[in-house]
Amino acid sequence: MKNKAILPIVLAVLVAGVLLYHIVPRSFSQIMKESVDTDPAGVEVIDVLIIPLDHEPDASSEREPGISYTLTKGDPAFQDLMDLLSSRRYAPLLGRPEVQYICIDGQVTLSFDGAACLTFSGDRELRLYSSKHERYIRTGGNGEAFQQEILDLLLDAAARSALLAGHAVVVG
Image (cartoon, rainbow, N blue to C red; front, side, top):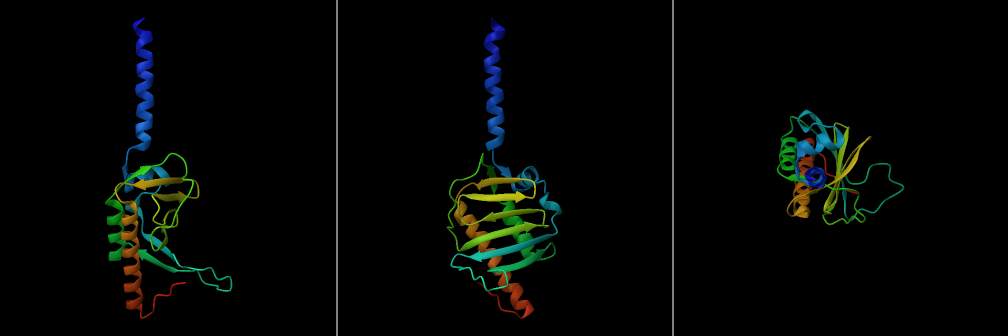
């Protein structure tokens, strides 16, 4: 009789443990390793693509819309970005959000060594994906402000890079 009473309790504890494991916030490093098999510590290059909110597609244009550039490990903006991404905890979502909204000044896609990508546009969810995996994650606190902070850092890095190279930053 005692064994029959213990079994439902053990099962409930196991189910709660599994559910808790899937919703507990993780560090950026943990979420990258678990979600897309990429260790941020080993990333050497981050390709950045920023598509402004007010961008209107132009079929006649041969170039990518928005701002596109590369950060390498020796670049101070690379480390600033990695530090900013690592400053938050990320909760994995079970499933995919139904609707996504653009709530910041544009959509940002970060490609880590061409193996994994992180995309966001100010919505509560961020999309983390690779050729084999896809996961939606959420940051704690004010996610929109955090994403805007990342966007501002990236726009500043693009402007500094363009000034050093003697080029103008072209948007659109």
